[in-house]
Image (cartoon, rainbow, N blue to C red):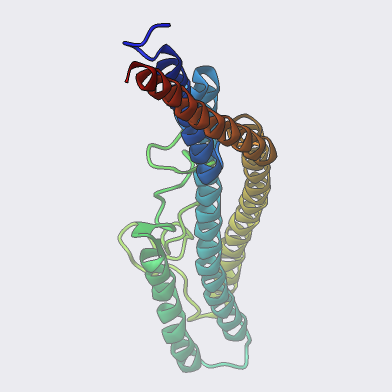
Length: 286
């Protein structure tokens, strides 16, 4: 019998240390809820889930971007609705002034309000902003020759490069709507029945342009609504796939923990018995 080194105790102690490491791993996985919390747990699984996490975070941000885009569109539509209200008021005044029962003095009084309404169209265009960006002054207008504008509005609605939707908002200043000339002078008038009739025609064209833009905005909004649904579903599916790879099986892990604890207790008992054998040898030598 070898008495200088207690081989049985050393071996059992080594196994007990390994068993304790397994127990610590069990506790770490159970407390975190993750089968893979570091690369050492599963190198390939860790790499795959990290890429999935990047995609999930990108899709979640894309969904928020789409909602921001919807807010932009709704805000723009609100300003255009007000512009439409002003234009309809000008048209109403022009129809009134076209009636032959009014005197020239009466029409001049009506024209005062018409002028104020034209200035209001300009004010709305200059004050219509979203996050400091003017929306109705042509910043996001499509190029008349079909080119891509340098400062058009786009919404990044995907997790990857160049996954965006462009939106175009026309110019709705008084000049763009043919209510003023390039110098800023009001060109619509109701001072005479003939002029009032021409004003009605101009306003009809302006209202048609505004309505067309509102319809386009509605189409953009419907598309963004679908985008929010699709990216949300994509994110959910990726999260489910990541969970199957990364998340811990609680029942199995608890079972492994109990098994490792039992083995560890047995090893501690074996160490005690191995030490007792060494003590018995000493008793023989006394």
